[in-house]
Image 1 (cartoon, rainbow, N blue to C red):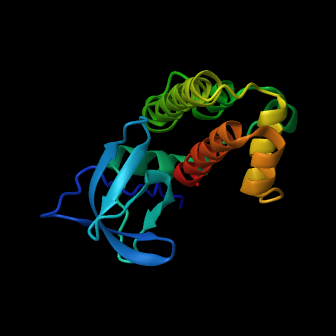
Image 2 (cartoon, one colour):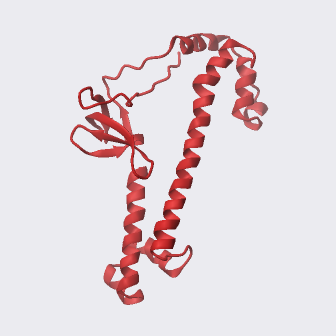
Image 3 (tube, helix red, strand yellow):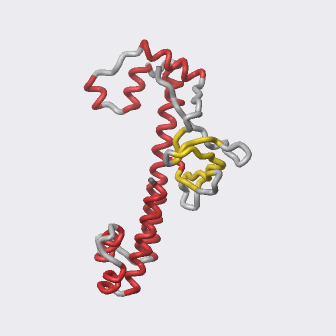
Amino acid sequence: MLKKFKLDLFGATKEKPVEAIVDGVEVKVTNVFDNENGIKTATLSDGRQVAYGSIKPSKKYKPTISDEMEKVFDATKDLKDVGTTSRYTTDVYRNFETVFDKKSDVFKVVKKNVLDPFDQAKGKMADDVIRYTDDLKKTIVDDLGIKPKSKESKLVMRYGEQRITYDELAKEVGKDKADKIVKADEWFRAQYNQLS
């Protein structure tokens, strides 16, 4: 039987930390919040802050499942799969409607517990993309003056890949632009670390 495993960290406090795993190590999560960039972040008992997505359930974690989802899982043994053509040419919503019978109580539960959170996650992802692209434009293009596909943009990539040193940068574009390229690289590195 399939089970929905969900690690609920939103109730974590210093007084009641939630045990989890980060980078293969057991930790205690004491807080979950949106950081200044709107990224879901968790505070660990040792004071570190990590991206929420990097947290895995502790080996001690016992998942729970709602009674209504338990009924859905029990009902799945009586369901028929959609055909191969429908599977690959029809969107997930219509496939769910077909498999679970759009008018049934089971479909309503599946919609509430699977499709609605899926839609919310897509909306959050779109918000995140907008937030990141807006921050990229403000920080890199507007503040540092590094335009897409420019010589400086290419140098940011080369510097980030350690294919050019700071001294080589300064010699090629001057100290002022070299400093901006380093700041741009630091911004991209911070975004990478936040997302990974």
